[in-house]
Length: 76
Image (tube, rainbow, N blue to C red; front, side, top):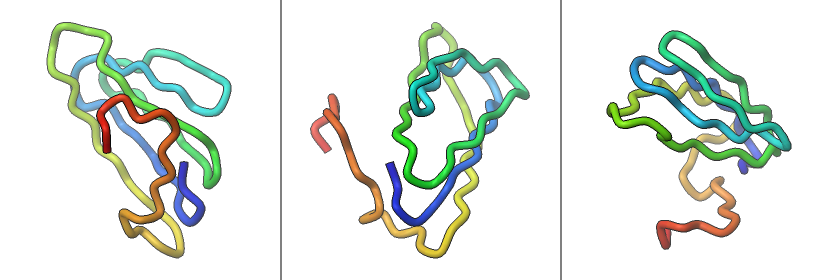
């Protein structure tokens, strides 16, 4: 989650499993989603091909310390 920025994710190749608030769905190549400020979200690759996305961040502050992690399975 972020307090100061929203994000747009565009899938370039592969398949993305997106959790955006209370919704979970798949995105294929050339599909996208918008994540508003303050909404919990996550991204996963459910496929066998590499997943490539473009992430566009927009907001008053884009620093890495604006990331709020909930149950980070990667230990960050």
